[in-house]
Structure formats: C-alpha cells, structure tokens
Image (tube, rainbow, N blue to C red; front, side, top):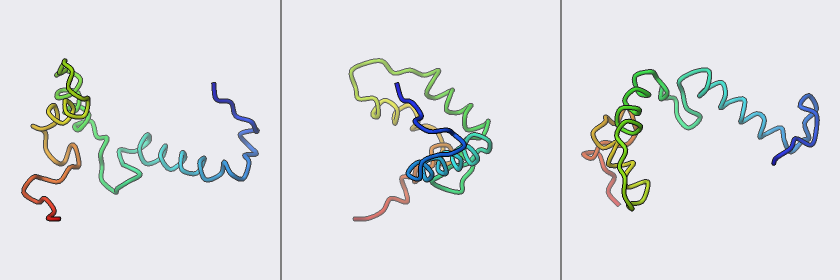
Amino acid sequence: MARLSTSPNHPRSDQVPILDAAQQWKQKCFLSDGSVLSNFSLWTESNLGILEEHFIKNPIVGAQPFLDKFRRQLEPTSAQVTRRQPASSSVES
C-alpha cells in the first residue's frame, strides 16, 4: 500500500510537480468537463451517455484483445465523442 511520507501541508520538493498536476487534473477533468491534454469538453453528460450505451451496455465477449473490442464498440460513435480523427482526414506518412 502506498503511504504519504510527509504532511500534506508540507510536501517534499519532488512531490510539488505531482501535486500540481493532480490539482490541474482535478480542476479540468473532475470539476469541469475538460481534459488535461486538450481544450475540448470531453466529460459531458451527453458524451458519457453515449459511452455508456456503446461500451457499458454493449459488451463484446471473446478472446479478442481489449482495444480491438473497445474500438469496435465505439466505431459507430462520432469523432466528437471519442476525439478521434475522422477516417477521411487521415494523415499521409
């Protein structure tokens, strides 16, 4: 089990960046509907409902890898929900 080795009011200097990042995550993702990786609204009630409908209520059982099944489940959703690039705007190598 992980334990905090210092007082929360007096973190060690190497803990400060981690605590700052956690505070940013809390504010942008938990208290708002944003993301620490973009300025998009991700965790909206609508997006969570779509995720529940296509992922939680639509399980795929079998031996396929998790990510393959996850991609299949979310395939019918919009790019707005998954923040993926639409297939027509793929980047050429």
